[in-house]
Image (spheres, rainbow, N blue to C red):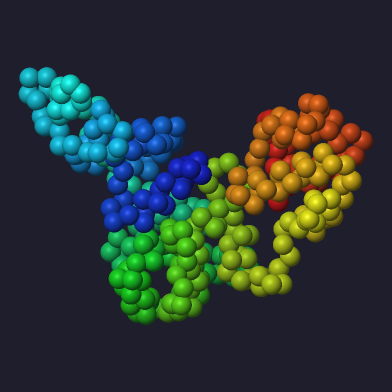
Length: 312
């Protein structure tokens, strides 16, 4: 399954997984995610849900909702509102709802972990915990489970009970959609809770699992012992990336490196090259001209298509 999903769309999907019902209405997509509609809906992540009649009052700006009624004469849903009062026809997107197709998301996750689902995953806790089989992370095999709403006590208890009766898996991953991990809980099988967001690559525009990051999160390399992919001095004049060291003396070069490092830290590493050069007051039109005779910068920065990022 090679669907390319933008990171904001994936963030929306994971947020929906933490809601009681994995549902969003058309008004929310139109108002808050106008650029994501095609990426999410038409890539198959959603299926159309039931029609709703409690809709936002478009004559107000406070988020108030009203009950729309069907008018057979105009063959539309309407409500009475506005000043002066009048009948308002409800836009079609305010009536439609979309349900996240969990099977689609599970298949996407399995594909990212290089798994091929030949049959539907085993559901261990209804609508909350799925067994995706055994995958390989780094140099060892790991059980792979997908779980939603794990931070809710009732769900967590049911997950513990389900894993207690589950045997045959090596210690592995409880892949959660939550923003934060579960504290002070030891899960049967010594499975490690890992946030799906934490598994995503920082260098790709679309959502993509970085299996090397997952290996570190699982402790294949001890976090204290593992070499950080990027290290830098306080003034950004010294940078170590993937074991290779670079030094910079010029103020503009230090500022440029600060900009790229900050973007990498924030999880959005790709920046428009022209914007980066302008932000450091450079008159250069390309990175090659900016660095001049210095050639080693290509081992530090990846570039192309008008964008650049740290080569992590």
